[in-house]
Amino acid sequence: MKQQYSQIFATSPKPFVKWAGGKRQLITSLEGHLPKKFSTYFEPFLGGGALLFHLLNQNPNLKCNISDLNSDLILAYITIRNKVEQLVESLELHSGKYSADKIEYYYSVRESAPKNQIEKVSRLLFLNKTCFNGLYRVNSKGQFNVPLGRYTNPSIVNKENLISVSKILQSKNIAIKCQDFEAILDEAKKDDFVYFDPPYQPVSKTANFTSYTKCEFTYDDLKRLANVCQKLDKKDCKVLLSNSNTKEVRKLFSSKWKVVEVSANRAINSNSKKRTGHTELLIKNY
Image 1 (spheres, rainbow, N blue to C red):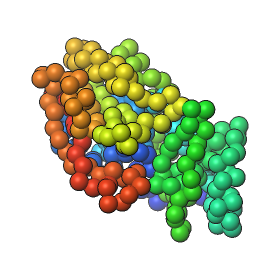
Image 2 (image 1 turned 180 degrees about the vertical axis):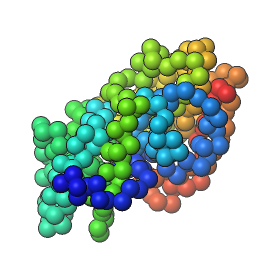
Image 3 (image 1 turned 45 degrees about the vertical axis):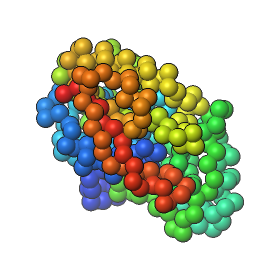
Image 4 (image 1 turned 90 degrees about the vertical axis):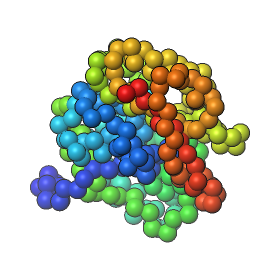
């Protein structure tokens, strides 16, 4: 098995899940606003990790402290790092059964609640690749509740990418944690770079999507985050925040913060015509 996996050509690792608010399409814009020099990279709302993988592709030895409050997501990162061969085998089984009966198999997996580590992560990735728009959403009980997507042939098993991700995450310089973003105050030091990409504040009453965990990210959480940013600034950390272009977000950051508007798409909007023509905010202290 190990010989089989070692023979697969290395590719540049990229996000292995489609995540609402993912930054793959904004990397070019983000790159122009990254600090030129920094020590440790912190990302407390990890999600799909688009910026993380971008930075690691440039510098595989970069010291990183990455975290998220979504325990299922963090388990996926840890499992891919430690047990990628078993995970790929499980995903291949899902792929075969899904091909036989898409509707029945999708909903049977959605209703399942595996306890085994490999099966839990395999279920998450399978649902992410086959559900509507790749949207990760749970209800108040923490149950995944997204319907089946309209895919002809979804890529359920991306073996090359999973192996590339596994290899780069095995670096001793990368720490992966499941924790609230406020824990960063005890970890980040002067000249460290902290990137915050929290669930966005809604731009309208119908655009309120913050259900990444059973505990939604509220406006009070955003105020708490703004306070954390202020404290990190006082510690001489380099802070970059992404969020929606709203009065509420702008109001929380004083004039000393640099606010930049960048163009962005809304990939999870159910109406494809409403996915373009939006702007987001990048807020930084350097």
